[in-house]
Length: 79
Image: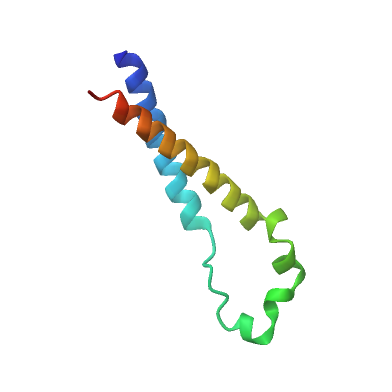
């Protein structure tokens, strides 16, 4: 059982590091002055789900789900 806990802890730390890096790579949600001029309606604004930013958001969601699951498993197994 200790081996499984050690493996889960290492995976948990790696997920934490990956999540930190990916969140820092993302752009801010505020459009700034570009929203006033209508720059949000460009091609990249409409197809954000297929861009690099959209991919980072999807990866973040998956990592957050894994983070929560492994945190719950490690917490349940701690007593």
